[in-house]
Amino acid sequence: MRVVAVVAGLALCACASATRWETIPSDKCGASVVADGEDRPFVFTLSEDSYVWYKYQAMNGKIWSPWRELADRRRMMSGPKAVRFADGSIQVFALGMDKKYYQSFVVVDTDNVTKSTTHSWTNWTAISNLTFSTPPVPLIVPSGVMYLFGVNNNTRSVMWTLSSSIALGDLTFNEFADMGMEATSAPSAMLDAEGYAHVFVRGMNRAIWHAQEKCEDPDLVDKTWAKWENLGGVMASNPSLPSSVNGVNFVEVYGRAADKSIWYRKQGAVQLEYGSSTYDWGEWNSLGGVLAGAPAVHLNDAGMVEVFVRGVDRAIYVKSQSAQPTGMYMFGDWVSLGGMFSTSPTVITRGDGTYSVFARGVDKAIWYASQWMPNGTAPMTWRSLGGHTRKFTC
Image 1 (cartoon, rainbow, N blue to C red):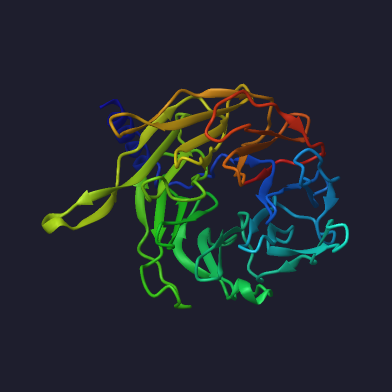
Image 2 (image 1 turned 180 degrees about the horizontal axis):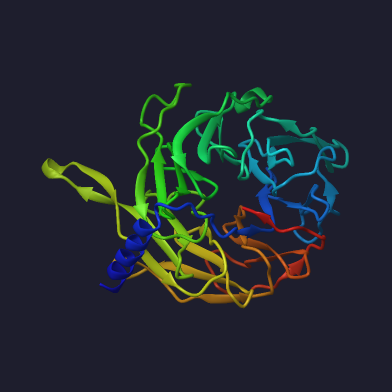
């Protein structure tokens, strides 16, 4: 009853403020991290001089490369966003000083004798002449293309485009199309269990809005989207999504609300007459806490959700979901992982099911901590990767 009352109050506040435009409190990020085909983490970040730098971990998991500049020297307005393709190659996107989207692709060379690898990067290439106000949001879909989302700098509308086939090795994009939604946050996007895309943004009324790709022939080039739906809430962060659907194959969305706690809402099955079923969104639920930024949402090796966020004391906290004997899924308490950080965390899952957490420390270096075993909450040791980085909007 308390949750319903609080959500009703939040929804009422959202309606009252819907007539005025309010910028979102800027979430600040420190790194974008992906693992290559050999399960080596690559860390990308924005230096203090506004160039993108990267660093990667050696095969033995103990030695890291030096920091290196990525591609040609082009200053960026916001931080990088990296994605990994099925073959292990990596593409990096960023928002330039001219507010255009740019991309760079890694070229990996392997010495057949020593088996050592070197990495080179293509020069930054503009994707479109349009200008944007948020960092690019890429999403690789099962049809073999990439979707790219952003918010138009002039109209505040959510825009999207799709690429040529990734298999061609030369990633070019169509013209951006307007999705018909004004946003006050960067979009977030994920795939459902059937491979269709879902997009979330914070709207002009500070609520979370959701659009789903229509269930048509997945090979069609001319994709269409269902009508935007208002999921409610009064949010003070970008919407945060797991990297994949939860253990029962439904989509869920998380965010920091106006009360500074983390709230989430997820889909659930609805039984219809004659034995058929569909899905609908459940109520908003609070994970509690008084937190300082947007969460990072991770799905562990058992299909349970783990939520990471920076606290007001600057430490990173995690709250983990577990299965109960009744068949219900419950979240435990917030557990501090320690540290002193100035940005929201980034989390990746390793090949053995463990996770690694990355964040920008108060010393401007990138720090990380890794699990020793999957699905555990044992103490983690923070290690510095060095660097002298900038905070950037997520």
